[in-house]
Length: 402
Picture 1: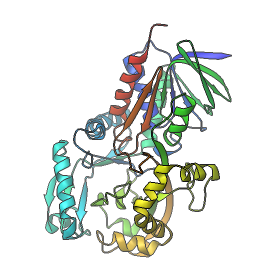
Picture 2: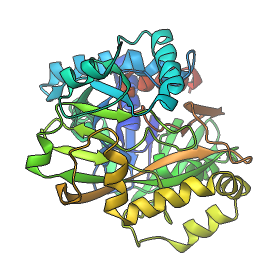
Picture 3: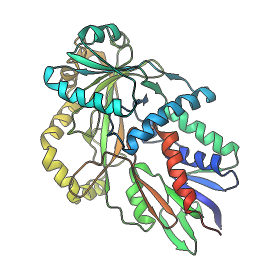
Picture 4: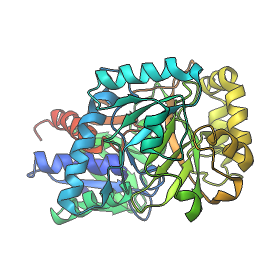
């Protein structure tokens, strides 16, 4: 038997759930459902990240990331306060460890100023005042940076939806789709769902789901594993808040940094290592079809050719804690190899074009009855309420009279 709804959202991560909740708030008269292939929500990117609430420092002025991050961060703090979800707002410093990084630091300051981010340029004395054990030539102090467990936020969205009578269907993997009049019929193991509008927020699988929905993606999702090392209790005392390096523009991340999460635990990471599977979290794990699909993509080959040296360096640091510590000591000289006590990982879904260029902004593609969120890496979790509202507006515009 086919169940019919007005809107179906594919993906039970924080972006999909925030989008569904935004639709619920805007149009309480509509029926909607969220389809998640895993047994629970927030199983992948949402539950495997640093938990940092970003201020909007890094993103090109005028981009969706810049606009939605700064707006979304404040909305997220307010939402968490209303729902009694713990947050912190300890701030962060972005440290130039040497003078040759000052030009890049100035560019970050320019971007942050254009994006309306409160910050201050500080020297060595200011660095020590904020983070007594950190060292650097200069830094940007961003006091509004915070932390939260994004899994808690996603589960709160899911609870809000359930209380309003909307179903979160876990264990539903979309395998096929077909158009039937003004409806899209989604086929999965538990049965069929027919929807007037489908919103594809499938994260690591979003380009594949887009193809299932009948639209050829012009970008491919490539998986980059980010690894986190937990610091010992003694070493955690070296870090008050968040300590970031000036990022390397060659890499799809902000550089290995120190973060104090909402539970008070301090971690070092993440790096950015090529993953041999879209959900391959272990260092030696992988999935052959995923690897072959990536290797056959011209964009991956061009990306690897252009950045092979950086990729080799990242892979080596993944295997050698001493090299991780050597790099991190540029910001925190007191760190020792023995201070890294635990290890975990997450995978970032990063869209890459056919020329091997990393796509830096959020990307949303539309077709008849379908909205595809094709690229939503960091700071999508920070921006979840704002990006959810943005996607919801697009989905609601697509609704046509039944």
